[in-house]
Length: 114
Length: 115
Image (cartoon, rainbow over all chains, first blue to last red; front, top):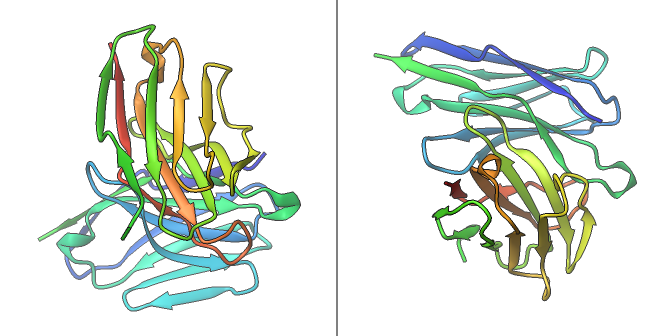
């Protein structure tokens, strides 16, 4: 089955700096890679996703890159703000054969300091 | 509704008891998923419904866990003979369909504590 590894487990940045979170996956059949933000006591919130037919996607201060050859994808947050502080999860999904489950990384606790 | 709704938000039960957790998906979403999240971990897949049928239940840990979605909308996760190890946040998600171009949206979760 799919295995997703995520690094770092914690990340502290100064407000205005950039933050990068990296994930690797094991199953070459995976074709969809979402990123979720989870605040304390809340469910995961989808913030951006990328499909296997593109290498990069950007939405305002957030961007995601995908390297299918290396089975590696990353989340980039620029101009970080205190409200970006949360736990971020990467995930991978394999849609082949009717399967549809997401396999999540272990999360990154991002802290944006003033 | 506006989002995925889960009830109750918190549930405390005694070891050995039976519990039911409810999920109301986003209106019109045909795909529904249950995940379990332990403290400090990412969500782990339990079961996926496409319509009324369970398309993939490979994540259910054992036969004490069961889920239904009789009318293709609301789903109930049922746990029999609860154990302390079942304590976790149970998350429900839904998506418009189960195919390639579908994002999954999560509810706020039910925090289950077995004492």
